[in-house]
Length: 84
Image 1 (tube, one colour):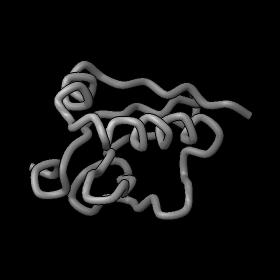
Image 2 (image 1 turned 30 degrees about the vertical axis):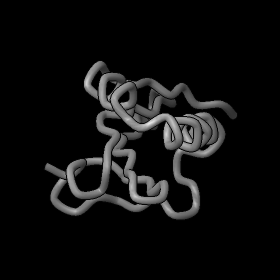
Image 3 (image 1 turned 90 degrees about the horizontal axis):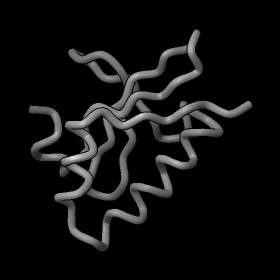
Image 4 (image 1 turned 45 degrees about the vertical axis):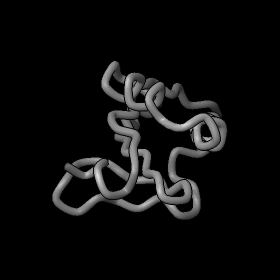
């Protein structure tokens, strides 16, 4: 059962701006979302729609479309800035 993972343009730009040492762990987590969009450690956001995935001091914010079997990444960034 495979899900489609899609980054919107805002998330793509944020990913490109991250330090090189953090990009690969984030990409690895995004690939894992294809198998399970609700991995251990993923939390439902309060005050926002979607979920967050913690990768060290960085966060990936995403929504899940159950009908289309799609995970839409809408923000990637440092924990101090990603929720703004």
